[in-house]
Image (tube, rainbow, N blue to C red; front, top):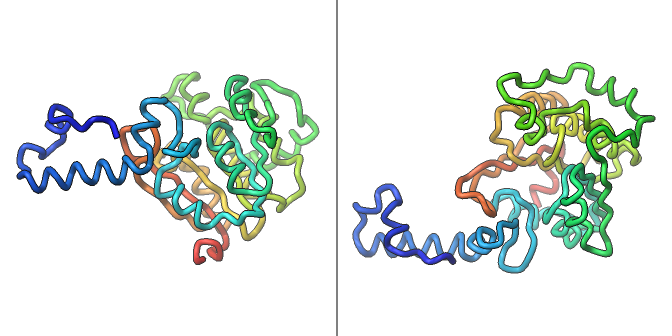
Length: 256
């Protein structure tokens, strides 16, 4: 754990009102909860890792439950690659990731078992699916105009340049995948394709689901009969809590 010196702890709200035993309990929580999850290591390396290696950049509660419910024979499709790709490879039978960024594509292909596909902005791969995709996205929400274009792109709110990226999932048979992760570009579009292609007993992992800008994606999934399970908490790298959600039509896995 990063050194918990008096100067750092003094900046915690309410720290000055704690007595010695109470301060000891705060130190123990920071060391035992964040320390055992490798949070400090993720800060030092500026990477989504725990004490053993790569982990998804999701909240810790969601990672913990995913480890419990993922069948080892699961087929996983991931929108957006990274250390999560390396982690999923050790927890599932098949992992396919689609990535729009060359550097992340190279990083995620570090394993000999990797199947990471690069589909950059403006790519015309999968053009034979664009007509079907347009029907699926015909009433997709307009872009948020109060955000500039680089921010909309970075947040995964821009769809049009990433049609090839979105359509990559459509190159597989329907219901092929048990888990689909929405954690990259064009998230509302990806969520709609995921809902249309997921195994009926599978689930969608939607990260950063505390963000209201994806509200239409959540609404669409709920209208399609999905239940939503939220996992709020801290996670690698970030000094704040956020939410990772699971959307599913079947609670069988969660009940295990």
